[in-house]
Image (cartoon, rainbow, N blue to C red; front, side, top):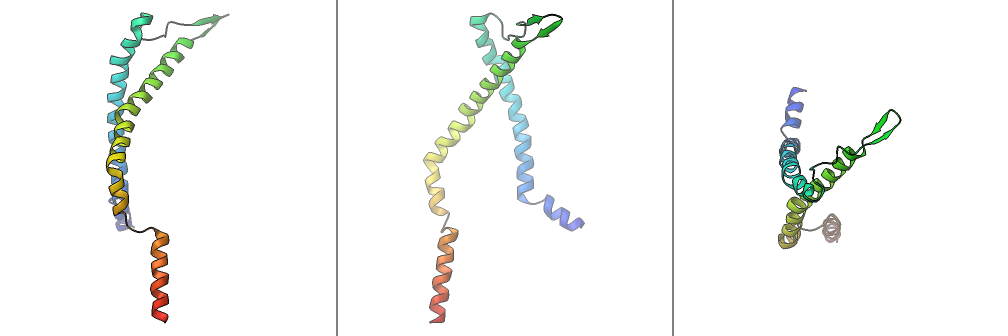
Amino acid sequence: MIQEFKTFITTGNVLMLAVGFIMGVAFQAVVTSLVDNVIMPIVAIPFGEPNFDELVLEVGDSLIMWGAFVTTAVAFLLTGLAVFLFIVKPYNAYRARFGAADDEEAGPTEVELLAQIRDLLAQRSD
């Protein structure tokens, strides 16, 4: 059982998943800093504040803090925009430029391999 667990934990998929998770957490800090320290202050130029947390609606004894929601929603959209611009777009450009070579080197599909096996078996039986 220990050997089986050792094999499982040292396979490439688990290690790559762990590395991807760690890099994702580190990248989140970079994107959060970009949004909080660069983009939100730019948003503050026309509005005078880097967030909308002060916008509240008082109904009886309750405070509806809709400004905090707007701040979170804007930060979410800007984070998505940053991820799109700095990760997705460059990756798509890379795949468009170099992806065709990867697809050509991939070899035959499963269906093509099965057809080849069928043809070889048919030749053998003749």
